[in-house]
Image (cartoon, rainbow, N blue to C red; front, side, top):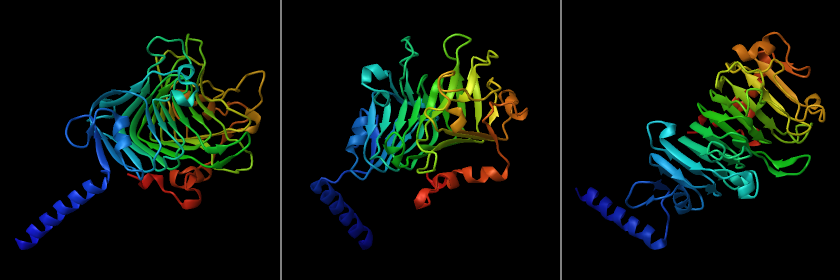
Length: 347
């Protein structure tokens, strides 16, 4: 009994000491009421110490733009599903002063080791009836980011994953991003950037662009160098690609190269959407010639959209991998970097 009483006294003293020193809690809450609860996600993030911490987000819709610029921040939705906890905005690139600035959630290069789970992030600019333009849901430039069971909703340029210190030909440091069991929706270049990104066991939904003849492109990857000077490229593994509506269109593409070099690899992907047999399309057909210097590869593609893969009728520069050649694209291998990062073990 004496030991319990002494522990209680010490705990109270510690709490008083923390309060007196102005120390900040490492777990705070968005939504709800009481000590440590904030009405917005941004206020909750701001309340964390400079070393980061966890924001538990109560179910509901938070209409705001959120910027995270400190390391070690985790955003965890507390609902029964990702769609129960939503961060939503409707900024366009023109309104925000730039493509990246339009993102509903912006994870800056200072925000390393960002983790988010069981949450939906969306930009409803186009869905609100506006003329379609760039309007991001999420921008990540912080290295070693991990998302599990998240939903990213937009149309053009839904999700940007961008490396750091980039010039026209290289980047000084990588941004590595790993998403597992997640959902991304859009129509034009809606997964784009120059980072190293692995989408594992994810669902990619294409919303056909404009008219029934409109062209939809999933990726626009930009590797700035041909000599592997920095870690870059998009890898899709054990995932599926669907479309809405399922109209039997043929103008859906896996991607187009945003720049002279581009790296996209699809491994064991179920392509239910009607992907064009060519698979890939030039950045500006008839003007640019980036496919010739890019690396677009597949292994184990299945479904109606994989017809060009199984028949080996993808565009002429496409690469058909062997099983052994896919080993280097396993998440913990491809994203390891110089520090041996193992994203699949991050929780």
